[in-house]
Image (cartoon, rainbow over all chains, first blue to last red; front, side):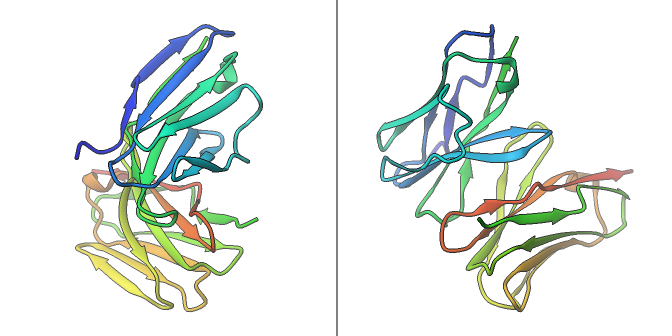
Length: 113
Length: 109
């Protein structure tokens, strides 16, 4: 298995633009997590899916953020409109079960100018 | 909600010195995981501890889970430059794991 695959690896966008981050979890994993990492706030959980259903989105900063998981092999995190304070590294992770070992993707480094 | 605190935030050591990072939870944990993130990389799973008082070793790394299952530690003996990175604990109560802020280890050759 190629592991968790995220795209793009880097994204630079202008303030106000829509940004879509993509994730392909490891086949067979039923839990998927989106995290945001910054120097100031560390690794923050944004949203957690189990069996493609959003279970906990309490970490989503505000309505500008949305996430979907239309099937077991694909998830998106969308920011619309983007703001400079959204600049961070966004990680997707998957696991077998909600408490299992989490496998992280390589992350998307987002810069909003 | 569950909180996981990790100390110290940073640790500078000379190569060959030992290193320890500590993780404390506000609630009793069912298990605790440790991850390592190299600079510019992504977190990579190291180990999971489940039992009260459990101790596990991976070469120069020793992981401990407290008797009350509310704290844990990671100790590295004789650090090497390859140990550089940020070490995270992730404590699980009855739900999904909560990550600590991590301890960044800087090893000076």
